[in-house]
Image (cartoon, rainbow, N blue to C red; front, side, top):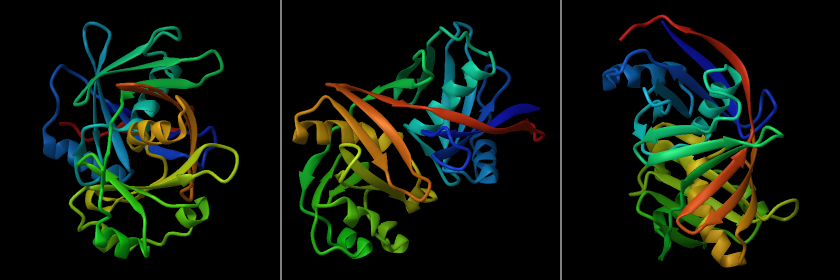
Amino acid sequence: MQPFYLVNAFSTEPFAGNPAAVLFLDGPDWPGQAWMQGVAAQFNLAETAFVQRHGDGSFGLRWLTPLAEVDLCGHATLATAHVLWQSGRLGSDSPAHFDTKSGRLTCTRSADGHIGMDFPALYVRSIPVPEMALRALGLSSALAATDGTYLLLELETEAAVAGLKPDMGLLSQLDTWGTIVTAPASQGGDVVCRFFAPKKGVPEDPVTGSAHCRLAPYWGTKLGQKSLKSRQISARGGDLELEWKGERVVLWGRAVTVGQGELQIGF
């Protein structure tokens, strides 16, 4: 049986932030893809993290939504690092090194419990705003950019982002599989955002670390800042602090464990 934990990432509250399942696997080999996808569908959270310990003390880490595997996930990485330290699987002063489809990712923990994740900075380029995106979000205009994976739309106000009522069917028809909508924060931070990925089984993600790998260089360039505070204004909500370091971004957040158990289905 494989132990699992349910964790709310980018929050210290039990019903806020982004929930992730963290599943620890035995043995040196990954399970079959169909088994992993079935487990992720069973948990039915935005992401399930699958974790293997390597002989050198690092960990293999993969992330699956209910419908597909992804190359990078922030909140499930934060959840995994949190569990490693909380459960004693990793010494409290040791960094957590993860080997992933996005390369080596390292997490460290500050004295006050904040976890910093060293992620790649992902740069978007400006494009004409897709008409389908405007229709899906009920917008007349926006600034648009993309890196080929996510579409980023900048609106003028936080209120405009908060008031969106997307048509998920139309959003799922976009070429990019995730959509970030963002604006300057009206108070208490620098930027706000929401994130939608219905094509991958996540209609609206509560808090999205990978989106902030794009937002940090995007807003850092616009605002002339290396450090940013972001609030993802989903129903659950979550807070991130960002350090843009050229080709890397450090995402800071906290997490809380809300449950644990054992998976009784072998692979």
